[in-house]
Length: 70
Image (cartoon, rainbow, N blue to C red; front, side):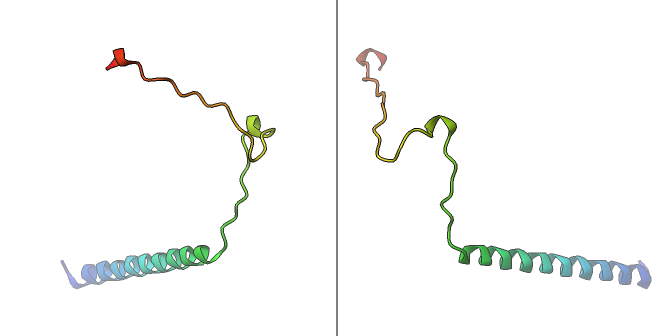
């Protein structure tokens, strides 16, 4: 390799290194800022559960174990 090729390779390597470091810095900054914000508890209910209020009892099916299945 001649000196020009090494110089071009070095320039591109430094550019990629700088871009990687800038991207990492920005992502960590935005991640830490998002952790500082309070958690929003807004969620949408399933359409079939809109009529169910908090505290309502729901029907639960628990089958008995069959001894013949073992």
